[in-house]
Amino acid sequence: MARDIKIRLKRLEDEAGILVMSRHSSEPAIGQGAVGQLSFGLNGETVADIFIGHNVVASPLTLVRIGGADTGDKLSVCWRPSRESSVQVATTVR
Image 1 (spheres, rainbow, N blue to C red):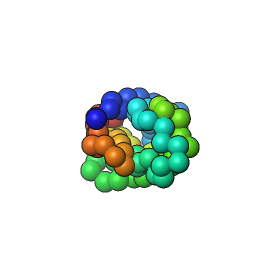
Image 2 (tube, rainbow, N blue to C red; image 1 turned 30 degrees about the horizontal axis):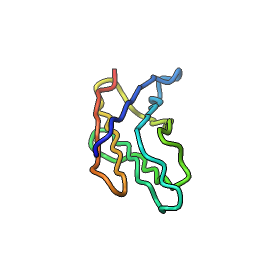
Image 3 (cartoon, rainbow, N blue to C red; image 1 turned 90 degrees about the vertical axis):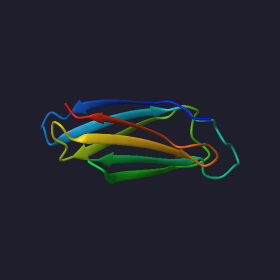
Image 4 (tube, helix red, strand yellow; image 1 turned 60 degrees about the horizontal axis):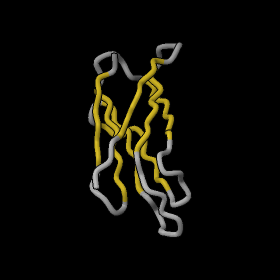
């Protein structure tokens, strides 16, 4: 079952990048091994991968600082759960 991903961008004070706040719905999988992978991309290239284990809360909030992001760049966030379909959202840096 596909779930929503909510993202919010905040330009860093030094203008050297952005802070990405991401929340995705997931079910706790106590004792079931890895839950999934959260990937962050900038202009089509993966800049961060986070592998989430079974002890995570149901809707975790993830903060990632991405340097070098400029106005007009494309940011994507993809949640790949181990037992469901992937969900991806994209936005443009303003």
